Image 1 (tube, one colour):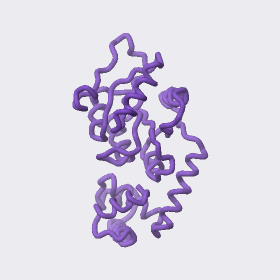
Image 2 (cartoon, helix red, strand yellow):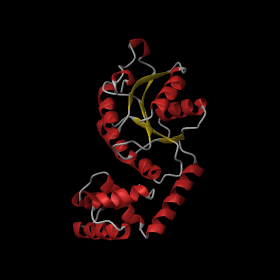
Image 3 (cartoon, helix red, strand yellow):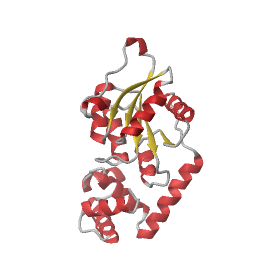
Length: 226
């Protein structure tokens, strides 16, 4: 959203002279990051910064209004989990490409964001040329993530699940809980009975020492599982 209007209105799309450019929506809650990325991308002739958003909800609204080609999405936003944002963005604009932009390559939520449909992961300390190249490749239909990073994320997730005594199935259900899905919706998505899902949810809450879903999600986020 437009920074000079308190984050309330997104910047307009480029004029017809720039229609062939790749339009990018930048989503991050840190003004310094927004400024730095804008400068980096604005120096690339074939990229047009379509607008800005500082939260997941603002990003969804901006995608509907601006219809960008690529969304550069911060992994950690104040109101939504990155996997949930990715799902929402792709639900409102199926063709949009999502690049996760993060300073936390070790965060387990990266795995969930990729599973939700993100097309790439790039670190915030990357060179401008690498950022631009990732946007170009993703816009062309590639999935861009280094094998080493993907392996690191999976290894870290497995380690954290073991520490909490959680199984991968319980993690899958926990992740869907975080996306706001009900037990019937989880059962349908995973091909399980509702009673089975209910049992998994109860076990997950017990392992996390939580009394309800909200506590479970809070504790899972605190220990880096979500």
